[in-house]
Amino acid sequence: MRQTEISASAFELEKWIDDYSKNLLDRACYLLSDKEDAKDVVQEVFLSAYKNKDSFQEKSSPLTWLMGILHHKIADIYKKRYNGKPQPFSFETFFDKHGEWIEPDVADPWEEDELSVSALLDNDGFNDIFNQCLERLPRRWLIVVNKCYLQEQKAAEICCELNLSLTNYWKLLQRSRLQLRKCIDVHFFKL
Picture 1 (tube, rainbow, N blue to C red):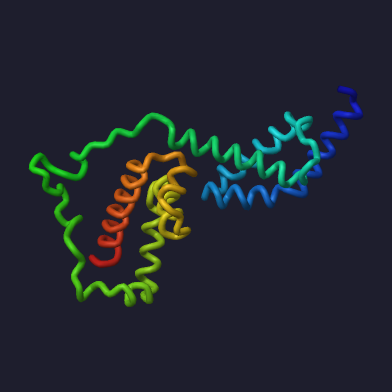
Picture 2: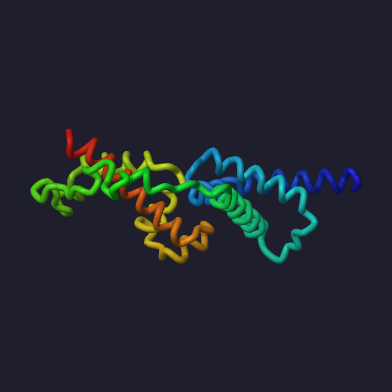
């Protein structure tokens, strides 16, 4: 490649970085829920775009092409996270040898006089504690909870997007609910 071709493509890449970094970073933050990971993946997008600049045929806008690269990079991240070594699961974590809950208060219902859904939703203190408890969930659990309950996506869609088995999906939701309940019990109801 001649010097003028290199400098022209480097200039174009600099322009793309200036023009499209914010859009790519915003999308990556939304999809990954972590700003540092988002910054890393956006850098990888520009490196990949530079290495594969000859494949850009200008049939779409540069932003569309870069977004396509971004989505492939993020899909690779999720595949690595969820397709790694299977996580061991044992019922002994939750049940004793007789099939009883190890922590009996996990299955105990909240007192009716303490719990009124509409009262809780109007309680700023409860909402603050609930949001703090959500943030304490492991990152991959939080992604599944957000997609299921906040974005109201269907189980099959979430499993396909995150490459999860249906069993693993339900297991992650159950573990999340148990951890949220315990956190809310400790930080709100038992104050």
